[in-house]
Image (cartoon, rainbow, N blue to C red; front, side, top):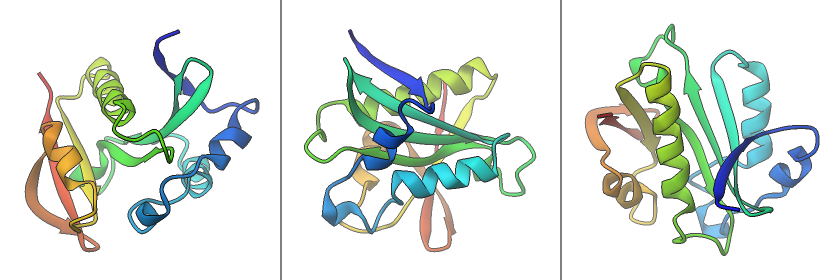
Length: 150
């Protein structure tokens, strides 16, 4: 079975919460359990999804779709991307981002955003490689970047 996105359900939420990233990345992204708690408090905006490769959970993505958000960079964007330790550089993160872009297009959006912690070990190069461009804004010390959709 090819790569796919799945919604978080009672059947897979425990596996989702158990997904661990590389220890050195923990300063860049919150744990899945924290992300799911945030999604629970913002069900109209949050879009949490799991990435599977066959029946193996390999990543977690949480995006947002909130046209009424007070900051434009929270109206349609990626909040979190956690790729499981040992599964990075395998295309799973790229797949997750492209699936989010497809959902954004389906919803009539033409711009998505992402924020990252500026750090030489952070995800900046990953997002730049996917076509994101810094906007010049920062939010709580994080770089705000955008990507326009075709």
